[in-house]
Length: 128
Image 1 (tube, rainbow, N blue to C red):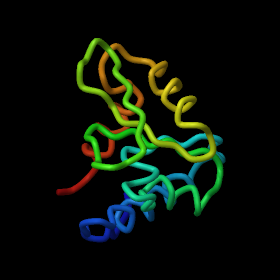
Image 2 (image 1 turned 60 degrees about the vertical axis):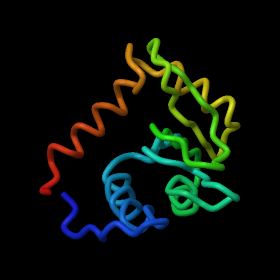
Image 3 (image 1 turned 90 degrees about the horizontal axis):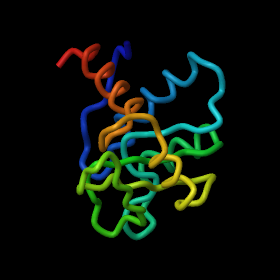
Image 4 (image 1 turned 90 degrees about the vertical axis):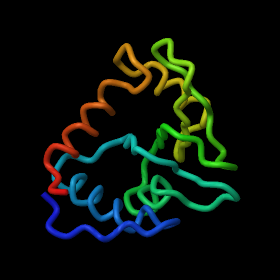
């Protein structure tokens, strides 16, 4: 559990999420690739959550978003027969390679099973 989480600030999602991600990553072995729910880069080369995480820890960070952010340099990936794509951005690996990795992640649905499970776990342990 993370004792204090900053309030949501439009345009600065990373201020709330990054400290939590860093705490979680501190608790385990160093990851070569981290996948985040969000964007690495936003429109006009504005840094997103993934970019800030990469600056903090290095390595490869892949952003997987469920909704398009206008102007973001994302690669659309359709999975599981869904017509609604996921939007993939990356740093430390090409966007095409990251998109291929996301397309190949386990699970029969639009959202890879691992990402669905992480989302579910984080929601079930949060006090709203």
